[in-house]
Image (cartoon, rainbow, N blue to C red):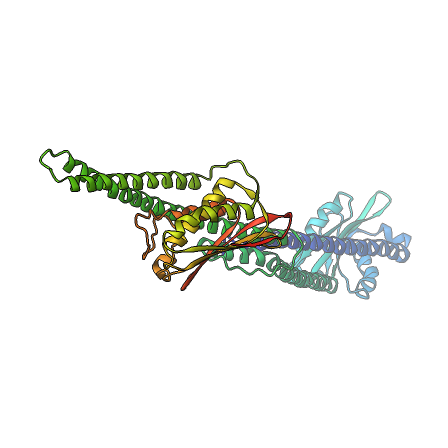
Length: 487
């Protein structure tokens, strides 16, 4: 709490307000006290003038020649009526400072003594004494007749009413200052809370992000710097989440790639080892001079030849698969698909007839942009696969149609349904089917087909069942016609 922005802001604001209020209150008090003192002094000066005039008016010329004590008594009798009618207290002293008559309280003796000292020097002074609810003023001045000092006059008056009123006004102002301070403090607290609340919310959301929770809903109503900060935070949060998701996906890809690499290596090792083992075994037997069976020798040589051919095909397929994996870019050109499909079907028809299988075509003219040798290899692999897994005596149908933005090829054959375990990973390397009329499959054919279609930005899909349908879609462009042919 002590380190929060709200606490620091309110603490600083409170210190500023308190210091400002105290200084302002002290200044106001000083101003009011000065005004009060000036008012008292002005009143006492008027008293001094009027008392002098009153004495001058009531003093006879012969009275000026009286002795000191008699003169003081005369002055007292003259001023007595004047002083008491105005709520003053008075003290008369001789020119030497001796008290001759006095009605001033002994509480103010210090003021009268101090004023008398100054009056003996020929000065008129006003001294003030403050108490809890009163301010007492004492006017001290000398009375002269020419250069002759007739005596010292001290006039005292209480200004308690003015003093109390002055204090009351100051207290009211202080109270107003207090209310103003409370109002400003409350308003500042509410205003600060409104400013700081989005920052507090943002801090909580950042902690959620640290814990991995990216589901954040911020109600942004401000268009100021705080609102901009919240918007940028949301954008940053989305970018971080996307980056983390991307990293997670890339991690999964790397793990899958590593897993696939290991499986690929293990399968390659197994596929290469099988024919090599057969070749090595028969070669060792043939190298033995004691083997006299000519029929066995002939069979062994034939076996070595067949395994060598199998090994050769496997190596070729591995090289092709490696090329597809590396995505080597080759020259692409416009391909007229009807002619290419028809040529491949004619070439593959001789192999199909060995198993009493017929290839029927229904081809529509269309053009694609690609590598002709790879498209040819794609169709050959798919037809070869269809022949291997078809029932003897059945037909293989090859259909091709021109769509709005693609060229569609369908290859259908009747055979046993593909086992679910094989079907789920049919386009992965070294996945082999069962019930083939030929042996020695490397399991790379459909994988290579899938890579060729991907390289041409197309799609390949197999529908499983008693009729196996391979569907291929490759982007196309305008063709020269829509001729159909069936053979």
